[in-house]
Amino acid sequence: MALAAVAVSGALALLFPAPLRRWFAPAPVPGLNARLSTDGRLLGHFPYREAAGSDLVQVSPGHALHRDAATALLAMQRAAAADGINLTVLSAFRPIALQNELFFNVKSERNQSALQRSRVSAPPGFSEHSTGYAVDLGDGRAPMANLSERFAATQAYRWLQANAARHHFILSFPAGNPQGVSYEPWHWRFEGSADALKQFEPAQRLAR
Image (cartoon, rainbow, N blue to C red; front, side, top):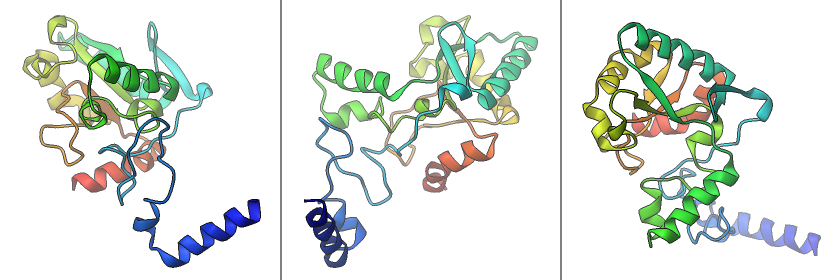
């Protein structure tokens, strides 16, 4: 059976170019009837590996980031506090298993299609949060704006626009982003290490 599978795989490789072979491959996420695009995205999202537990550092109760992102985030919070801004962590590292629950359970509760759900939440294995380099931020003085576009009107967001790049954080999903993900002014990713840059290079290339 193994030899037969290899033979079939080899035959497909000879008969069909890579973009067409994607349609013969199994769906990348069990339970989700969607295929990878030619650039490797699933419903707009790029694939990301899960950070190793040994690389994670707690940044607030219940929230952890990759140690490189954690150091930068804590420094950024201190700088914000010196300017009178209270940057709060709403979400950070998420294991793929948790992302699976967030995607499928909420999709079911809200009676959403996979495409609708993917505009606001990545499929498991395709979330920046799983890398340990992405963080959702809020304004401690405007909690009603948390995780909504209203965050863009807060002092915390205006401070991030002016200062986040100094700490190697960029906005992942600005308005009208080419990935087709909903505008998320609260979602920032760290790009201050070689590994982070490598992981997010496909997203950066698409945005150019």
